Image (cartoon, rainbow, N blue to C red):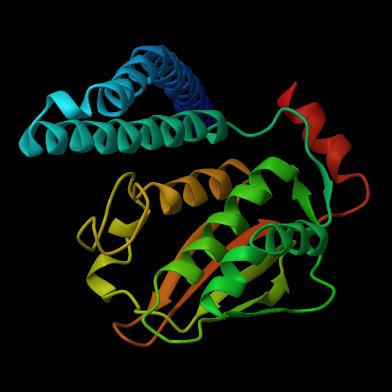
Length: 265
């Protein structure tokens, strides 16, 4: 009996130590995310000033500058605009890092339909075909996270293509264990398997900046948003064979929101 009591005591201590470690990690993560948000927010004002005055100089004093001087100002304006995009993406990342305090039933079909409608200009410009499976299952989450997930993935599918007519498919692969595995598939340039993990890191680009627009933060935002909702994301792809991004999210079940709300309060 003494040996059994000792084992139980050691297990209780180990579990308590693990809980304390998790709490400490969560606290440090919150501090880091808060710091990232504050820094990103504070950088916006001086950057806005830099961008504005470089544009004023180019518009009002272009005749006083030679070709090289005008080129320098144009480069400064472009660099400021790019930095502004990166800061905006950092702000999004910091906001999506934590699980929403209030989750609810989210109609995925409506989220996707609204996003595709908002991207209609790009769809028409690229002559793309976007196929969305009917009756996508509802999930437990929040609309803002779902919009970032599907919006970035569909946007990337329309962007990273050499095909004359991009084909994007959105659907659900399976529903098991209380989770729905969604997919966004394209016929684009594909991704080498050695980069399947790297593409989800922030500001990671596999191509030269001039080839495709963007900061390289889109997939990092997707990963952060999926994980904040208790899911996971991965990619299946080969170079030149398109890409299929898959992510598992909790299915909506009656009473689920109440249970989650109690667990996070």
